[in-house]
Each structure stands twice: as structure tokens, then as C-alpha cells.
Length: 180
Ligand SMILES: Cc1cc2nc3c(=O)[nH]c(=O)nc-3n(C[C@H](O)[C@H](O)[C@H](O)COP(=O)(O)O)c2cc1C
Image 1 (cartoon, helix red, strand yellow):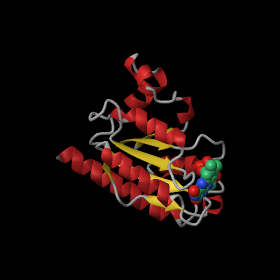
Image 2 (cartoon, protein in one colour):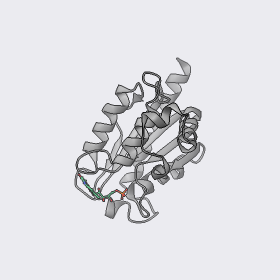
Image 3 (cartoon, helix red, strand yellow):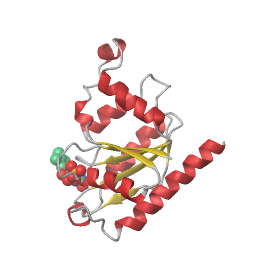
């Protein structure tokens, strides 16, 4: 299975990017690409769009298109999805009604040092993704106390089974879509 994992943080030492990288560790037999450079996308602008996709946007669109399943890992800023990730989703939602994410199976994860693990942002992101036609899984995973649970490359024993379950569900949903 080809998985694209998008981190909504561009911060060095990001807990969300660390969680994104764990996907590759836990799915060694899948082809996993991790993207954590969303700040390279220009701000969405309709005038830019009519001139053709900017190179960084087409790169991301092609990666989504080629993936069997997508994992989006979101930080939470002020109870919402950070602007840099929201901007990427706006680009991916175009053209209206024919998003590259349409009918794509997506698992949403989040991580935060806080007690809810970014669950509010993850919930909002699921709503947006559903609105643009993605097949969004309800399960997901929100890692609270991320500064403790994701403090180094060694995965916390609590995260491994929960993340494995979230990824197994993604794999199952992808196989169901392929069979349909
Ligand atoms: C502008 C801003 C707003 C934030 N708001 C929240 C919040 O609403 N809920 C939360 O759990 N953490 C919040 N945080 C803390 C982030 O969860 C924390 O900085 C986290 O490390 C960001 O993710 P990253 O490590 O992947 O970059 C906020 C941080 C910033 C910079």
C-alpha cells in the first residue's frame, strides 16, 4: 500500500511530524512518504490558481493522487487547524467539487502537549475533509502529553498499539475501496 503522510507542522522537533514518521516505522512493508514542508506552498489565491498549479502545489496534488491512503497529522492552534495545513487543504480541495482528495481514504491524527491531544483540530479537519468528498475515518488518534509521549524517536508503548490500530483501520478501508 502506498501511504502519504502529511504533517501540519513545519517546526523542527515537531511532535506531529514525529508522529507522522512513526507511520513509516509501524508500516515497514508499505511505501510511506512523509511530507512536512507545507510552508513551501504559496497562500491559496484564485488568481494564482487560474495561472496553473504552482510547482509545490502540483507536487502535493500528485503525491495525494498516487497514494492509496492518506494520513494527515494536525497540530492544534487555538482550538483549530493551523493556517499552513488549512492552506494546503484549500489547495487540495480545488477544483471545487473535484478535489484530489475526493474518494480518498484519510485517517486524521493529532498531537499536542495539552490534555486533549489536539482532538478539537482533528475533529474540525475531519469535517472539512468530509465536505470535500474524502472518505474520512472516524477513529483516528489524538496524542495528549506529546512532549512526554513523543519526546524522542523511541515510540511510547501507549502510542504503538493505538497508532497500529488506526493504521490497520486505514489499510482495511483502502482494501474495501479497491474491492468496491
Ligand atoms: C498559536 C498557538 C496556539 C496553540 N493553541 C493550542 C490549542 O488550542 N490546543 C493545544 O492543545 N495546544 C495549542 N498550542 C500548543 C501546540 O499544541 C504545541 O505548540 C505543539 O507542540 C505544536 O505542534 P508541533 O509540536 O507538531 O509543532 C498552541 C500553540 C501555538 C503556537
